[in-house]
Image 1 (cartoon, rainbow, N blue to C red):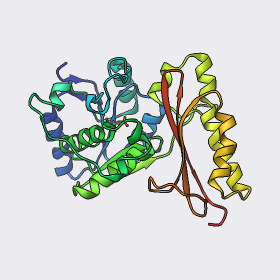
Image 2 (cartoon, helix red, strand yellow):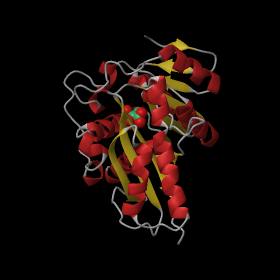
Image 3 (tube, rainbow, N blue to C red):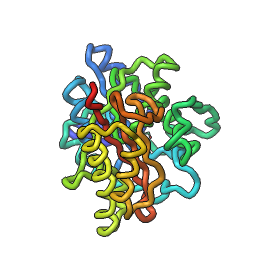
Length: 289
Ligand code: PAF
């Protein structure tokens, strides 16, 4: 695909042309927001686009299914790629530029360098998917080089990913402001995710248990419960129809577990529903604060 033009949205596959367009806008005094995505856009992605449209003069969305963040046997080949629908949504939104490169434009032949992320990448998601965050950090850094945006927008659903990206940006002095936007949910509370498309109607019903368990944790804390052991014990029956990988109660802004909730915490869940792995989380405010 070469350059396609719509009246308002420019679609590019060339990294060099995107860089040139972004720098030209910035030299003209405009701010640029980047929303990195792997496509299969849903309301969660569109809320990031809206945040960028509200805060920046120009919004760039990248659509790139990054092979380096998938382990062998994960869903790289089957990952949904409804590019025409995604472009339509972004054009309707008034997005300025969409960068939708082929794999070889991002990872050229002979590519050897990658970002090694430290301890923030090791537990939870990092344990289940050991090379995942290295792949994410590498591609996000590359996207920041191609699109030297003023701000970049990520979703709170990928809580640990947002910490990994903040750490990478701070450690490597990347001059971009990271914004993390709230989770967007279906009417029954299921966090929006491109992978929800894999769920059968029955699995879709079972998946809403993640949100019910998170809300239960929130209610228990609001009622004065501070013991994480007691809270997670009560969450388990609500999650009986899914295969729980972990329930973690973390000090907000970290991947460190707490035993009692005395300050803001994030309750994070990973679970398999059939063959689909889902993650979700909820920030919980201690009653003491
Ligand atoms: O969150 C995602 O969709 C991906 O991990 C990202 C940030 C676009 C990198 O491929």
